[in-house]
Amino acid sequence: MTDTQRVELSLPVHIMLSVLVSGANCAEPAGRPTDISPAGVENWKAQWHQFNERLGKDPIFQKSYQTFRKTRELLVAACSEALAGVYPEKKEMSLLRRIERIHTEIVEPYVKADNPDPRKIGIIAFYLLQHLVETRTIIVPEDSSFGKALEFMLPALSPWEGSTEQEIQDYEALNRSAQKQVRKILLHLQQEGYYKYIPIPLAA
Image (tube, rainbow, N blue to C red; front, side, top):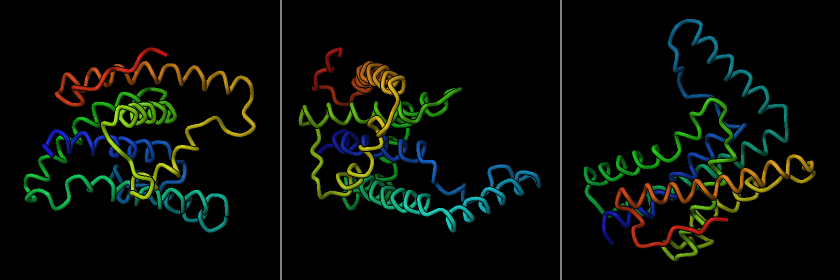
């Protein structure tokens, strides 16, 4: 397997990990304050206090957090599977930096927008993964770390039970937009030298 193929295998997992982190409303606050001013540190402490208090009192939040942690652990494990033990450490780190650069180019426009919608990058990631699987570019065994993580994630990308008619229409519009973005992303990746031999999905 070439370096390029290993990057192609790893990229969807890294994208899904970003989807999870950006869309979870039960993730822990940052491990250290990003703003080290006295006010910034106090705000960080307050966030942790609020998180721990809710975790101790809210059973639904507890369950969501447990699912989040398990999914994150599975995705982190899956992120290293295509590279682990294959290369010397220096080469492995070089490929990881390459994967990080490419995946950041894909994800950042959606998570750093003025009014980000975590569902959009989630649905984009789903359709991208679906196309890669349908073209047999990658295979995701159900019992793999990635396959187990997807069992937790995919239901969250569907309309919620009890959604209003307007919410369903909004979801369908988001769906159509996401499929267009997949074509745009694949064209960009092919210009970068990845997934060169798979067809671009047809317009919905």
